[in-house]
Figure 1: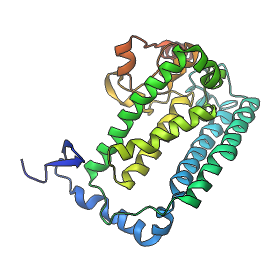
Figure 2: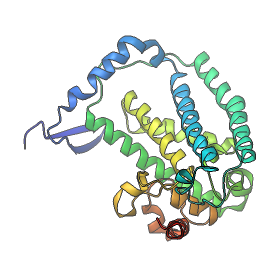
Figure 3: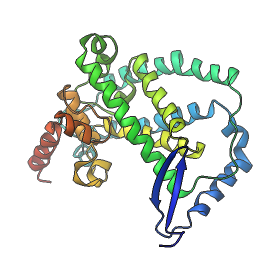
Length: 292
């Protein structure tokens, strides 16, 4: 095995063996990183940049899914992929969830971003980009770590009634989630999720490009979890052996709140005996009735 096919990545004291399969991985991301440094370095160094990146990405995703929700009211081609095609998302649902999202961003996210801009110095940027394997493994590692952290947080907030009533119950207002329910949260939950998303790349000593990649990936899969659709190309239909939960299993969690606590993967619920395929069965039954 040549050096180009086998390499080692070091995160501090952690030694992660990875395969590159002959890819010229040292040169894959470097041109992109050089372009960003040459043209947008001052923007990238701003402590506000991660906030703007995450907020704009989230709003774009929920806007796209909300358009689908509106079109699904009259387009059977879209409605057929909804987990609950018989229960459309109403304008009242959209206004209510968008109102809390706007409130949280104005009252909590915006002041936090201003505070970082005022008191945090610009972020130093390295000259070298991460290798392709560092980038991909970093995102995977952060996702696995976040999944474990949120599983424990989520489990505690369901098992301890005071925590559930005080902080988490608001998220369960909707038994059949849609994309805007993703951040239909209390301030405590919003900050908890934001804290782990920010800290995990630091713990794993990720390159800042990997950190931003993880942020975008986390927002995407979180929104997809709540979207209310079961598309053939959804991640839970592409990852084999049912390892990925996705929108179907998270929908089941909203119907049976003591099941499917893990946000992304399925192994913690398997080990804890809290797996439920309620929504999966309902979706399959709905497909059969429609003759799909």
